[in-house]
Image (spheres, rainbow, N blue to C red):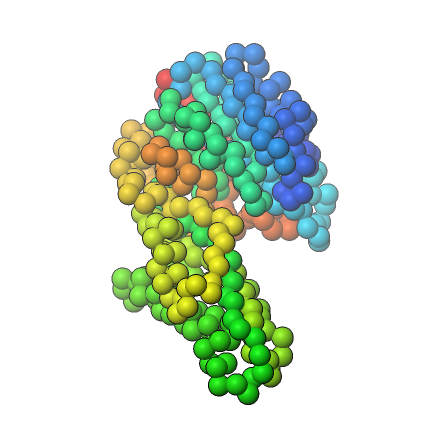
Length: 361
């Protein structure tokens, strides 16, 4: 299969502005019309518009066992590009453009395979992975729509090597409530919200530190990213706020870790917990990578090492479906100014995805 048609598809996909935020995508957006036209009438296409730019587009032909999942939204283009970020530029054996690596390059390959292969095939395109409030994949699995498939392939950049495990991502906003007053009062030691926050932070970081199993093991990656509270140095702080995150290892549970962190609060009745996002690791807690390992063996693919970035493969895993991550490019090439994917990676992906589709059904 030639690379040039893939480049043509990628050019059209990159030209579609799917920045998230602002995520102003709808079911009748041109990118979905292009995808439908490209795959052709042999596919049964279903579209769900969940509102707020969250769209799921499913194309199925025959009775495939493999579901390819690709998000079509991108991070904002940002400033400082050498060229228009929504105009694909081929230079030095690279394809430059917002989303070329993350992950419209994979989408372009799948569209070309779908348009020329007569085989069983299933593609799920979504538009809400990059921003807050994503729901496309979770609603897909909650509705039982993933049940017909025995293997999920999520097309995030892995240098086109199968990845069977990655860290989860837990984002938590914690609010501490104290009793304000004059700092000359001795009760400040116990009543200050910032004091409570500081004691909690020390204990929470110690919980994360003790997750290390060896000197070289990073354990849980916990980060206290935003801290604020109080009004003046001579006023007992009535409020304090922390926005922190943790990235757990494959098989660990976000829920269990959060409960351990909550216990670190000395006065739990004066603390509020908000979880804007909780994505499980891959495999999810109580799941294994055994089925995905067998899938790789059958298709003569050697799994690569686990990665630290999160993907929606974990949402499928949490629903009991074997999932792996496999796509062109490297994560270091994504989300940056002058984002790019190597043409050699697209060629390798054509071959690898093509072999998987040919053996499907």
